[in-house]
Every structure is written in structure tokens, then in C-alpha cells.
Image 1 (cartoon, one colour):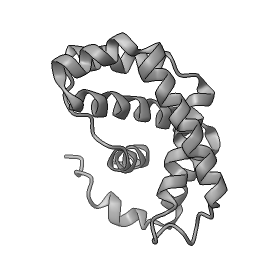
Image 2 (tube, one colour):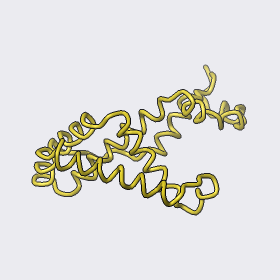
Image 3 (cartoon, helix red, strand yellow):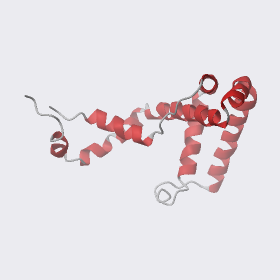
Image 4 (cartoon, one colour):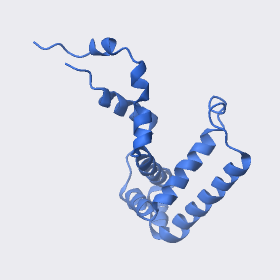
Length: 151
């Protein structure tokens, strides 16, 4: 039996992506509203912002150079996006989610939006190919030993 490399890549991605906690009906409504009221550009800006903030980590700074101006520009874009979503596009859903489910609803709803934005990023062919790039360095025979033997 061949080792399922695509499943390995998917599993690695799932480790990278944050897990989804259980949301209530109001968080679900807010999540749907956030996602449906963001454009592809908005989602790209959100992912770019996450990247610029992640680049602050000392272990990443050597592979990702982001200037303070770039980071500030992304902070400004995301602030405008979140302000628009919370106070205009999804005002009712946000108020209800906060009223009935508390501040966790905010976290859960933006977690969903972040996951959707990352899924769109990962659907890019170059990014998807980049995620499997590590497989050329894996000793496939060691992985194949893990698969059950046919009887």
C-alpha cells in the first residue's frame, strides 16, 4: 500500500490551522455575516496582516522582512475592515452574538473568517505546491513502513 502523501500534507495543514471551537447560533450568524461581507481583497488583506504580525516573531524575522510602514499600513487596513464589519455590515449579528454568547462569540466569528481567508490563500496553486515541497526530503520507505500490510 502506498503511503497517502496528500493526507500527510492535509494533516500538516490542519496542525497549522487553528481548530474550530463550538459556536452558538448567534456566533454562527455573525460568522456567516462576516464571511459574506468580505471581498476576496478583504480576505487577502486579512491574511497579509496575519503574515506581517507573524513576522515579528524572532524565529521568523530572518525569513520575512516587513517594514514598520508596511505593518502600520496593514494595521490600518484591517482596522477599517473590522470597523466596517462590526459597526455597519454585521452590526445586528454582532450585537446579538455579544448579548447572548458573550465575548467568545467575537473570537469564534473572527476565527471562522480567518480560516476562510486562509483556505482561499491555500487554494492558490503555487501555495499548494509549496506545501508539498517538503515531501521530496522525506524518507518515503520509513513512512511506508507505517501503513498496514495487506493480508
